[in-house]
Image (cartoon, rainbow over all chains, first blue to last red):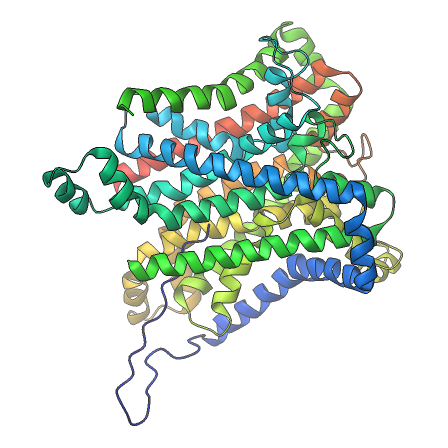
Length: 285
Length: 266
């Protein structure tokens, strides 16, 4: 995620006129022009299209929202997506923290290879991810495990694509953690487990939470890896993005926009939460 | 839980989830020898798909590199109202579903009643179901990646050298070109490479925006899907292996470069 920008420090003398030591704007004319161009570009490319989606959704009014969201297939898709993403986020919290710990504190020969492996799900095209999982866990599986077209496949796909998020979120924090507190605890007789639980873990919680939020947001948005793997069976293994695509292919842009707006709202909440968490992290130093 | 147990759990998890499945794709692609592979890669449909993917991704990368460096400099070196909002919004494309991206572009650029689509159509410019639409989709999706890599590097670099250049009389643009840019070049390179990897892998947004017309607007990822669904699994696995191989090579090179750069303290 974008590194947290430290808040500019401004000192104000007590009483009297408050002098702002950080001006509201330090833009030169050239920088101001650049900012204008960039904001324009960003708006046209990203903000306007997304606003158009919300506009189309809102255009249908509350009835539009309710009709779409109470459609049994859509409701089932949203429920499956949200619940599976939550479950995978929980899995990632446990496994992600463990993996980060092993990578940072218990380096061994070949752990550098693990670093590359962890980034593979992030770099791999999602359709290829689906094919990859299908190879081992599908109909032609060499070990006889076939979860294609089941809910397990949805869970598996989410777990694959969200693997890096908690790990990469926790790793830098763990690397920069001051060991003094842990060493003090150790010298006072605390076991490794207690030290971890009461000293290290609390320090990692904002990073873990941010990673979990990203994992959840990614799971909820996932599409490509599920296309071939889950069979997209209505009411059973169909996720929100597949449902949206069906709406689009049938020309029902209004319904697709309703579902999209719900997802955008989720993404926005996640972004705000991460921003707040990062500010808290920066403030704690 | 002992150290060995932790290590074992991590290794097994990663083997089962990532390593073995990915290895299996390469195995499936290569198990009948190189003949089918070459046949798959010289199929005109596949060649066109790969070319289309490459062109669209390269254009996206250039656009996002320029945008990314510009935004990073603004976010790190300047203050302005709305800065925190911009910083948070930049990450938006990463949290948005690719299907939503495709939908948003269809709404705005469709020829019938799109906000931009209708006026553009009267000028003879077609966005959807052709290359510009694909470029828009891949640019949208990979937009934050250069910013994310450059901002930390820029923050760490500090302004000393830039201030020195200014005090010696260099103008803003000269300072940027000869002091700032060389200093952040690794951040830019990493960002560009990640952006490229993300662009060649885009699937959902491109599927909606391109119409998936075989031999015309079908990208490599769309070709994989179509081939697999037409029971042409050998070819599907071959292209999948090519894309997976490209992705793995990219992140391996980036990882290796990162280690070397850190070691040199560059």
